[in-house]
Length: 485
Image 1: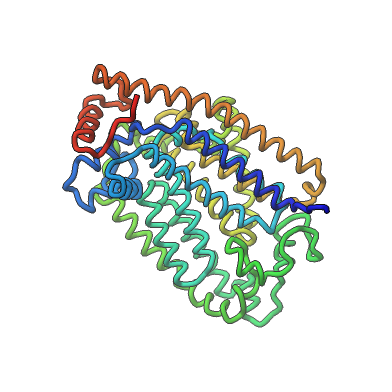
Image 2: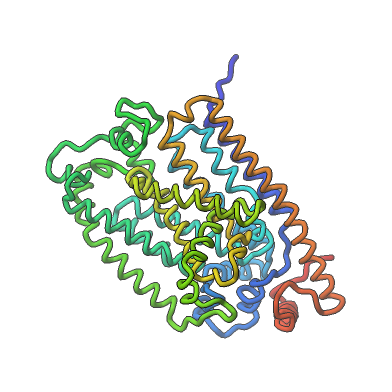
């Protein structure tokens, strides 16, 4: 008896194995030892009580990491003490829904074998700092997850979904400062949508509203994706009706899912940008009320006077997945990612995959904002391992968009094998390089704690007296237990 195994099943199996391999690395190298910002965001919040709810939103560097502090409070309430290893696991777990959400956006658009690029690039420890740093993993990775969820909900178009989208945008903002950047993204999306709803000549909503024949989903896809035709020469869905129900990341030509729904949506989008503007103003106001420039950080105005340095930092940030090859290659790689992101925006890729397109815009904005805020530290700082997950996600979306827009180039098996070979090579290099760095970082933390036990010094924190005081107080109060030697 012959057993038929679909390429989708094989891809799911391989992607699952890649994810398992990543979490084996997390299990092997994560430690229950505070690391750098963990002293301020986690230990200080537990031992310096009396600040109440307001303490969750206190500023730390550029961030107000309320989400991390809430996770700490929950784990402390359940287990009676903080466990940095558990928090690191919880942070890295956010990668799973991120990959699943992006994969579901492209599931019907490209071959399952090409979708393997996503787990191969994301589930590899190039961003190795996030495996030994509870604050970083719960902050950066959950911000990325909340933003993606906000975009998915916004794509649904209903009032409750968009209300939920705004709530997630606020949560992302108080997870990492990068989350604030989802508001201009949502505002741009709503403004473009509102313009379409106001009978802009040639727009899809205008055609439907005026009773003219609107194109079906296949012809929409054919216009936006080079190399396709309305006859169905790509693996994109042949009808917009199933996609409207199952894929909120896809643009729909006529109703969403029908004409009556489209009529109500046209009424809703007219005021959507107003609600987002108000939500943005309130969130930004709350965030920057009492905000102070972090000590030792470069001036924003000084960065803006050197636009070429800011541009170089932005490209290095987006190309930091190639950090092992040096600054110049990272800038070149990031330049390619940035250029293709601009091509997608120019070609209005948001009409095909709005969630993917606007998520890519968000990632580019994160790179640009980081450049303005941190270029004064030097361009090498853009290659910090904690930022590489942003570049890996941007690279993944650009790759998936390229596969969808040029399907004729990837019909043959050799071309798909070549793509997977390149992605696998990047993943293997990430594992080898990342594991080596993780072993060194784990040894640094473990040896530092052993030295502190014997001599009272060695903790990985720039202010040893404060680290010593916080750690001793946490141990005395029973909120943290030293791991066994």
